[in-house]
Image (tube, rainbow, N blue to C red; front, side):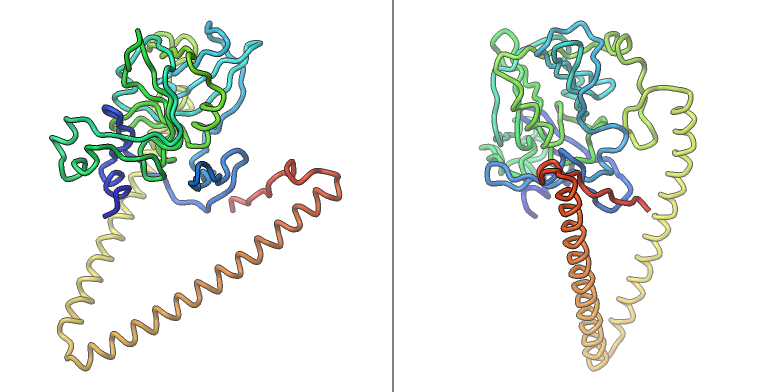
Length: 339
């Protein structure tokens, strides 16, 4: 198993002395491109685009009005509403969505950014190595930065009184976790947001982590919806959660039944195959190979067809912008139908 699969298998992300993560389950949806979250090449690595479904519920970064008392330049982390604000002038702030785990919840108060790293290295704690040597022993000497590194593309390190607090603000390769509480971890952002914040955060920047009382005063009460995403605690959201919990339970029951039926069918096929004569097995294997080849050929044709359609749509988009006098870099992305 590759290092990335081993790390993600048990949700062990973000540990520079104790950060890890567990991705929530989200329903599948066709990938869509969102401005600001496209795929980007950085430091020799290709960061994948963030799918639109992971940005739902207002999780994309945005400049907003800021009602807190903090001075411009301050980074404010609200672990209860799972938001991070980079305070600007004139009562404005850049807002980012974050994922928060146990280590993120354990810190309150202020500190300063005294270290910044691009594609940071990661090292498990001694306790992690002791309790799960099968997962972490090979990383005892550290894991170099890269796409399979739990700290993502960028990391900001919080110090207090000149000492490392072990509190990190960093990227993540698990986009589905953003906006959720996880089993463990520090403060994680989409890699695209981590790069954006990193580029706009000088050394010495003050970081304020709100208490629950401060969060309630400035954000109001928050709750987890049926999928674990932080949302305002309103009568509408409470009622919607009840409906969604029922729908989710029904969906999970249907999926469990389908999985059981598939497993039973596979067992039946295996038993049938085991009972075949050698000659019958040869014929069955040849038939399976032909069916696989046909399926792969069909998939290749469909992929080529889709690629040609996308190329034609892109040409139409650029041509339309050119007719309107819009430069290519400012040409809006194609709208993708949700239906």
